[in-house]
Image 1: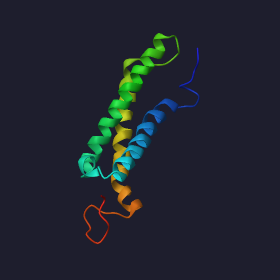
Image 2 (image 1 turned 90 degrees about the vertical axis):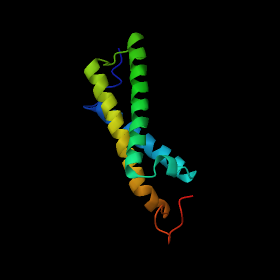
Image 3 (image 1 turned 45 degrees about the vertical axis):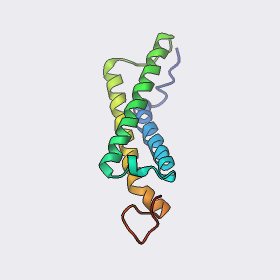
Length: 122
């Protein structure tokens, strides 16, 4: 019916990576500004795990929406390999977004979690 997920080559794959990457970056900034980074982003590994979980939840939710759209007659690819790859890309995008947030938010806001000469995150 509608080919909304295939306007350009690899559109679906790029969207499944970029969306969680961007959302995790935005969510990390919100958490960072509210002073909650110690719980979720206190180490790079914990940041990546948090981002991966956010990416997993978002990707799984979106795949559920794709199944519903398919049941309504909208042309979407929801075969198992595509679904699993899309979820994998969501996890990867979330992890990459968390890594980028952990690496760059301190620099952007000129704060530090470890350097006593710079303002503390909170």
